[in-house]
Length: 294
Ligand code: GLU
Image (cartoon, rainbow, N blue to C red):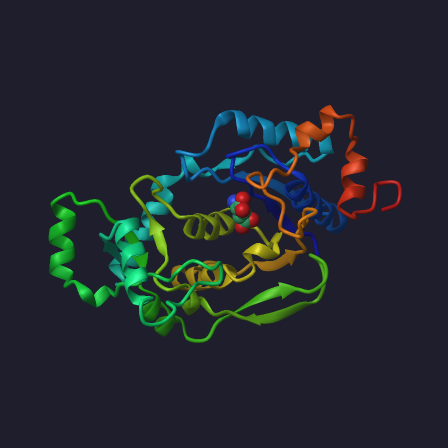
């Protein structure tokens, strides 16, 4: 079975060892299967994305010996493509404009929590504390036409009702390991955001559309995205998209036991390289066999 997989970083900082691990696991799996590896630049958040970080990603991958089979797909170049899917979801009554600001949402959660804890999504963020029914459709249309800022949200209750029980295919142990059905629980995420004024396609929407458009057969990424896969599977179902196999790999943890992150001070690959590290040192550091051992 020859696979098509991708590494899909957001160009909002330099890559660290955790990113290198994910890219190497993808690249190794493509190589082992006689398949292909692609790079996708996930720059839907145009305010945080920078061309110099995209250049850094390419430089770091090149240093690791990872060459994508094609020039990268850049999400910011495909907003009209994502907009079509949004129109379809709206036309089918599965997405709706919501007008609350982030501050409105925080206030509502605090008000709820006076009496009891408010439900959190699998990432630990409070679920959307308002209901679609709190405004009539006519009122939503009027406010939108009047130019009020809004986000488009998925109507999770309707979407789940439409889809019924869903599962995704998870490859066990390794990206090419045996596949088992994993029950999906998208409802735990509430009415997730599908687009904002400053981000015309959310990560969730763009990722499923691009994986389908690029014909990705295996989505290989970190365990931090395991539960989000429920949303991705749901969107695939609603939009009639093919279903890739998923594999969620272990995360590389820092000395504090937490996932590596730029904000927590993880050293960049560029800094390690400047200190004299070799690509084989990076492989050893993350517990992957070096080429001579592979
Ligand atoms: N762009 C996402 C990130 O940097 C990864 C998306 C994915 O692999 O599905 O976390």
